[in-house]
Length: 267
Image (cartoon, rainbow, N blue to C red; front, top):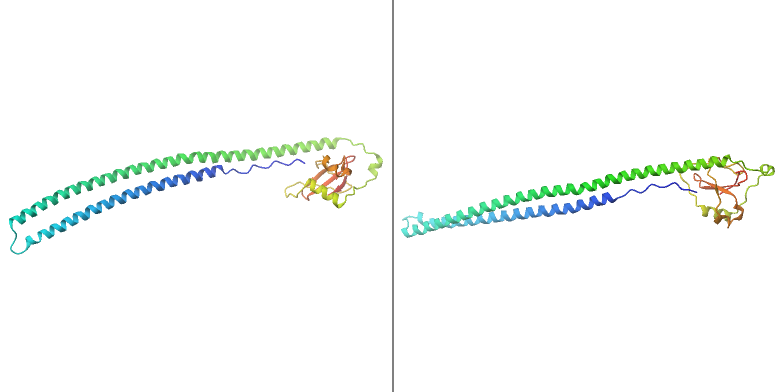
């Protein structure tokens, strides 16, 4: 008995690519942001060290100027020493200011470069996810096309079966008078029935088409009749030259004799 084709399972390739690219780009963004925070921290530490050094110099200067404010004043030599120290301190302040300005400019340049790098990473991420979206769209279109092909194939198969049934029903069977008047159902033992069930393995389906077939009655015209396979009637010779069809709504096999298409057994 011919089975209707099944639909192709949905593909997960697009989802797997999108997750892999997203994780890789997230790791790159995490590394860039870590470097930004590390450089900014170093610059802040450097500026803080410069400020502490200046504060220490000013504290020492105040300590040196304290004797000058004491009663009685100070000597010219002490003023000269203090003036020299003030000049040195002024030079250090100028150098520290220049270094602080240079560090500030370097920090600004690095921040600008990191900002440009961040923009490039955003563009790269957008360009990397575009093929993933295109793959997902193509997958969806392919799945819809497969579903349409499955439907067309099922309709074509059904039309061929109906055409074969119409051709078969149009044939005139030469039925002897005694055969039409006398009917004897086929006798099958439990073991023979079990052999037939295992051979065909028919299962119930909720969406299957049912047939009203009873022993002694003519098989429905819409039922697809097939010859009993030789592998089966080699074990059960009484089934030779008989036909069968399946009722998937009840999960049964119906045996039909070829002379008049009457049902002789249901399993």
